[in-house]
Length: 130
Image (tube, rainbow, N blue to C red; front, side):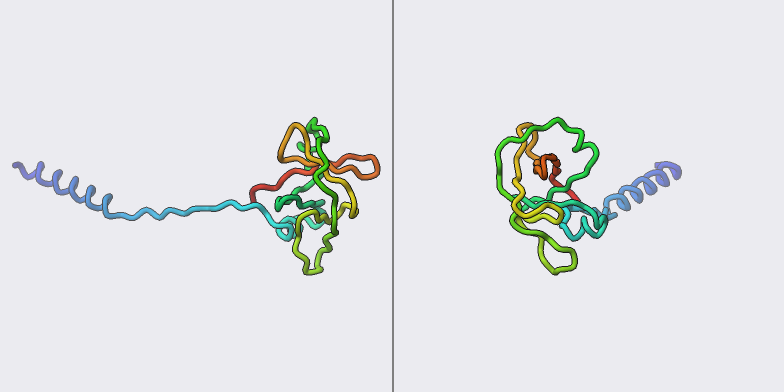
């Protein structure tokens, strides 16, 4: 075996051993739905509603342009959330919708709800990722 071949072999083995011995750090990110507190911290004027443990928000441009129709009534707003009250946002709670407002599913999408206030329909989109 020549001197040159021996050097190439040593370098190749060194690279192989170094590559096999190095540890790769893997970082995992878990995306969770935002909480009402997180959304309101970012935008204190956010209009929120919670139904079936899912937080919904209105006044989202692309959602407002969707062609969706009311389907079944799934409940009414039962309580009002007040910022700084120490309350936890819970089902059938809203921060800007009057108590008693009817909540409807939509025929076309599972992630959009409709409420009607004084004859005006508002579309609420499910906030499923943070």
